[in-house]
Length: 68
Image 1 (cartoon, rainbow, N blue to C red):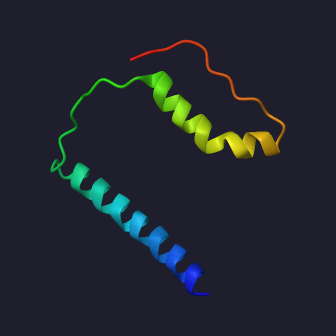
Image 2 (cartoon, rainbow, N blue to C red; image 1 turned 180 degrees about the vertical axis):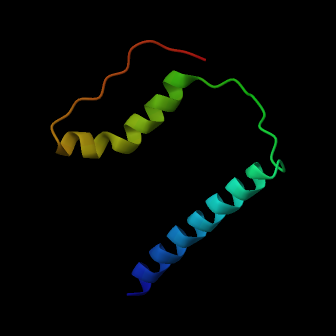
């Protein structure tokens, strides 16, 4: 029961943080800054995250190309 409560607390904390970020962005308090990103690396991280789910569904994830 305690573990479930902790998970719910963490979910609510993320949600509150996201709403606060949106409110600050909407009021111009957050100025976006551009930065270069290796898209192949970022997609690779997503693949790592979703690998188990894809395997469970008998799907194969594939990445071709690159970008910044």
